[in-house]
Length: 135
Image (cartoon, rainbow, N blue to C red):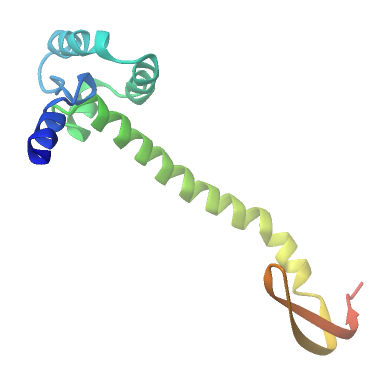
C-alpha cells in the first residue's frame, strides 16, 4: 500500500517538474514556459524569472538541457552561492589582513593557560603578567 502511495506522489510532480523546451527556437521555449506558468505559485514564478533573467536560450540549454523549472532554479541558486562564497571569503581575508598584522605585533610574557568550566562548558583563559604592544 505504501509503495503505491509513493508511486502516486512521484507521478504528481506538478508544473515545476515539467520539462521545458530549451533546445529549440525561442517560440518553442516560450510556448513550453507558457504551458507551465499558470500552475506555478507566485514564489516559484519569481524564482524562475530571477534564475533565467541573465541567461540567453543557448546558455540555458547548455546548463540545463530541457530542464525543469525546479532544476533551473536550484542550479542557478547553487551557482550564485558558490560564486558569492568564494568572493566573500576573499573579501573577508582582505578586510582582516590589517587587523591580523596589528595583532601579530602584540607579545605577552609569563602566560598561563587556565581552563574553567561553567554553564556553557569548558572556557580557555589566558592569564598574563604583562602584554606589550609596540608603538
